[in-house]
Length: 474
Ligand code: F6P
Image (tube, rainbow, N blue to C red; front, side, top):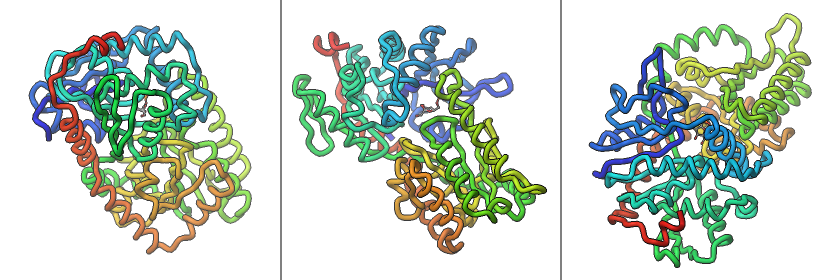
């Protein structure tokens, strides 16, 4: 791990409030960053989410929390608006119509300035995360922050002809190119970014993994580093007593049924409606499955202030009602079990272990960690579940040979793939799971952090002073 302190920038801080007290978030990313973060002098810059009592430190996490508070107007323009109603759909290939609102853009730019200005004093590796903060790398450079700057995009990056629709495309590209390293989950997202820079700017040359900025006389390295999970910890907890107890009671509940599982944030990128339509088609065509198949969909509430998300919820709930209304056999359980809520870690692990097939079928997804969690939980417990995986996820690049790949827009094809998943021999499915679990174990979240931070540390180690041109560009 690099010796410099680390300053991480992300929309949210890595802490959560549980029973009135603040603690480190449970996520694998926080755990993975710990060794680097707990170097003396590290900090995390993030939105306080509206909490008025955000501490500068929490017990058990030796890192300074540099919180950014936002007004209601800023949350509306920066978070619900430009981040989640403009960039989110655009970066996912415009599967919903992105909204282009100059007021939101101005608020996004102003909030990005506040993130960048929150911490510029110390010499550190600065690691900026995701689409909410795309202007921050250039702003840090302009403010004279010392040390290398990396940016990681957790979503896909679309082809140039889609990105080019954004009225503020030049500013967003300039923002990203302020970093020394710009990283993506996959080669195809990275290639889209490089092609976009070449198409929209006339001062860029590309050679291998380097973008040469001719006017600024700088080089930006681009990388593809797929994010992952804390595989060893996940595998350990999957076989733990809590998960096993839950699994036993679920096995009783679903006795005599094959179980299909979906776990997603309730987001239109996740393909939940298409998945339900495929299930509906399968139940229509294969009558015996009506009493022998159960589909368990966990839909974690998300971004409910945005109209498209509320509409999606209504559509999903209507589809669940329709399918259960059409196909529940008298005297039998309903085919679709739908949970619109978050679930405890042990329940999630038990669902992963229970499932005969996990349906990970987003229309577009940067990576998708549910796929990695599922194969890890199954692999650790000798499971023989199948992974039905959308070809439009980052995870498909790693699981190409062993998942059952599908095009989630093709409802007939998806129904056939689900049927195939149920028909594969157990030994075949078990062997596939073992190979996918081994891939995750070899490329866990610690390996991802190390690859990223090593590259950033090597890329831009020099002390930086903002040039006049860089200042005016901000
Ligand atoms: O990359 C996807 C992402 O926006 C992350 O930044 C975030 O952790 C997650 O989805 C949840 O979204 P939100 O913070 O908007 O609830």
